[in-house]
Length: 281
Image (cartoon, rainbow, N blue to C red):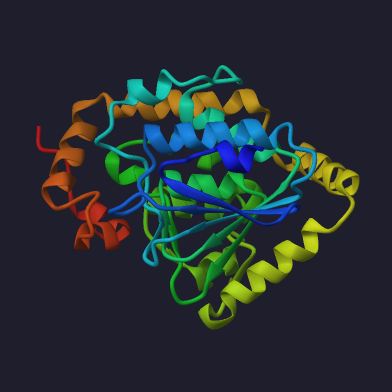
């Protein structure tokens, strides 16, 4: 049994029922996405791609402040790229494309911060519910002199429209759950006191529908709203091309000097503060 043998290092997997699974991220100090988490996610996706029982998967976080902070900017990219890639795409693109296509309904239950690759992860799930008081979303890559590498520029326009996609990606700022709901970035902002009850009730309800109907609904919605998979590697190539430039490296170094990837003011306010740091060349 997969549930007995799967031992992820940076999230927990539980099964409240055979039809419903819950994935809870836990990678202290701030839940960054690095090679180990990507490896765990690839193994989980391999199971979900063939599993004929699970109808709904909730993704959540054990950290009350950070859902997924962003990509691990201290990691060696070669470690993630050395992992198996069934799509043949770059490591993070492989995860997000496959996540979008699994037959189970995928729900992001966002408490805390989901920026950068964390935002890209929730955009790749089928639905996004967020704590009204605690959730923050954003794509801050423009402040690093880069395009988001996981396809946010391809997924956001279908959700929020062209103008608001420009606003999100070019502003690089944080979005509260209230504003994210108004824009269509998330499905719904739910008062935190009701959040757990709402997400569990909704996911449980959906998990009980006929699997064939779930599959068909997902197929047609994906057909009419997602870019061709082959478009997403272009975003990854653009990001890693930018990451190799001295401007990106300068900003990255300065942010680490200010405490990036620790429970510091810079991580809590990255959407604001990234706009105050510029390359030193």
